Length: 290
Image (cartoon, rainbow, N blue to C red; front, side):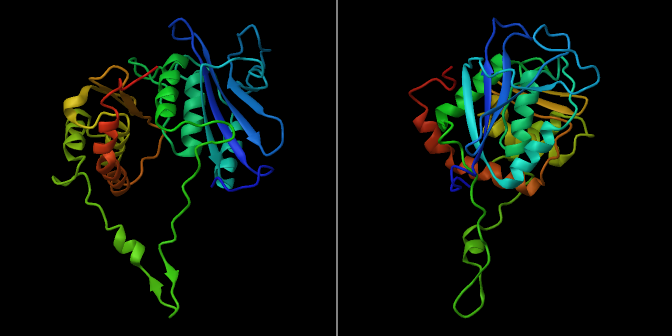
C-alpha cells in the first residue's frame, strides 16, 4: 500500500515505444522491480522475430529482451502481495503472439488484470491493439497522476468498515457515511442514460453486468454520456466503445469477469460526483495532450 520498506516493495511498470503507425510497429513490455533486486523485463515476442529463438510450442513471453530499449511512455504501479502473486501466475502462462494478441495487448491486459486499473491499447479496429495506442493511454494517465519507479501509483488501503469502540460495539459510522448507491438501471443514477444507450445498442447475450461495466469504463475514458458515443461494437463477446472525441475509447473483453451492477454503478457515481472539478481543470487544455 505504498508503505513497504524499499527492500520489500514490488513495482510493476508498463512501457511502450512508438512506431510509424503500422499495426505491428513499435513495442510494449512490462518491468518488475522487487525490492533491491535487479529490474526484470518481460515482453511478448513472436517465434519468427529475428531477435528471438523459435521455441516451438513454448510461451512467447520472453524475459530480458527490453533491457536496452528506450520507451516513449511509462507508468508504474505498487503491488500488494496478492497482486504480486497474480502477476507471477500471469508470467508463467503459455501465451502465443498473434496480431490480435500482440505485445501491446499482452502488456496492457496483464497490467489491467493484476492491478485492476484499466489500461487501454485499443485502436479503432476491434480486437487490435498497438503500442502507439498504448502510448496515448499511458500519457493521458500520467497527465492526471504522474508516476515514477520511486513514486508508483499506490493501492488504496482497504477501509475497515467495522471496528470496536470502547463499549465493545461495532461502529458503523463509516457505513452510514457511505450510503448505498442506486444502480445505473435506475433513472436517477448518473450513468443511467449511458447504460440504457449501450444496452440498446448491444445484443441481448451481453449481460447487464457487462453493459454496466462497459458504461463504467466508458465514463472513466471521458465518454460520460450517449451524446459522446460515436460507435458501439460487439464482436465475439468483446465490447468496444468509441467516443466522439478522437482517442476516447473503452473496451470490455470477453475474458474479463465483470463486477456486479452495483459495484460498477457505485464506481461510476463516485467519478461523476468528482467530474465537475475535473472538467473545470481541463478547460484550458486539450483532452489528450500526447
